[in-house]
Image (cartoon, rainbow, N blue to C red):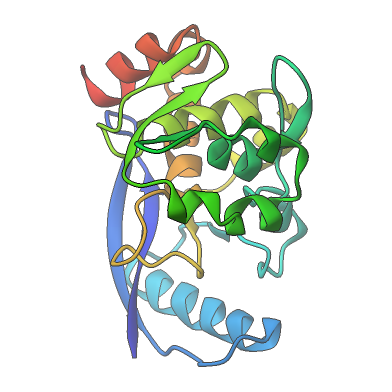
Length: 214
């Protein structure tokens, strides 16, 4: 057995609710094993929340939309180029000993995430996205803002996603990581249902105020 979060979209700040679900976990790195775990996770969740449409957002999703919404695949138009959200996120990290490493925006998502400089440059101190600087607190502020902006640029994917109430990411373990694409998706849907997306994305400051209240 294992425990993983599912993020329910909500209509008030912070626009998501965490539901921890106990489910049967199928060990192994193959896609088939991951998909068995996803099915088990969703089945257990729907026993407590029947009628909730839940979408797995990861490269292991059985649904094409869920694969397309993975930060590894979802493209973002930056001031200089188009790149996956993952590359923009990793390429915006500022450390005590270096960064941001903007050349990561030209790499594949996997190459960007595994770049050794991200682990050899000391303590993470901030995020620098072109001329915009983001603090480390709230912890998921920059990631959620970045993901939401990418979705606004991909309206077809965004409109399909808003049909779902809840989101999972089988690869995400809250004991090891902070940022989660499933959580970011839930926030986006919550903002959309309250017709707050355009206002929230006017600036990073608007996003901070509306989503985090500060």
